[in-house]
Length: 96
Image (cartoon, rainbow, N blue to C red; front, side, top):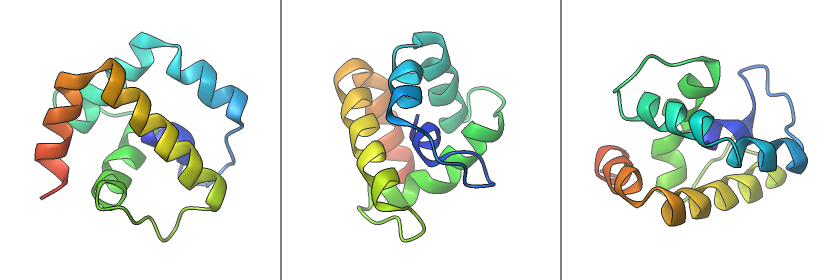
């Protein structure tokens, strides 16, 4: 999810096409959401998500590039629309 946009720890750029493919992979998104919520083990993308989630939800990601920020905003919008229950849990868990 968020981590999809921000790449793995080596900070590889993720294309908009790759982001679109990830957002269309419901199982992938659900796995990342479960990781973010502490309900399942995390892969490298999920670990990055857990690191960035508090920053992104507070509206600031100083280590993100402008492209990453745009992709993060797109991903957040997607999760809010398509996974409202998980989104509410994430907000409660990370926004505080």
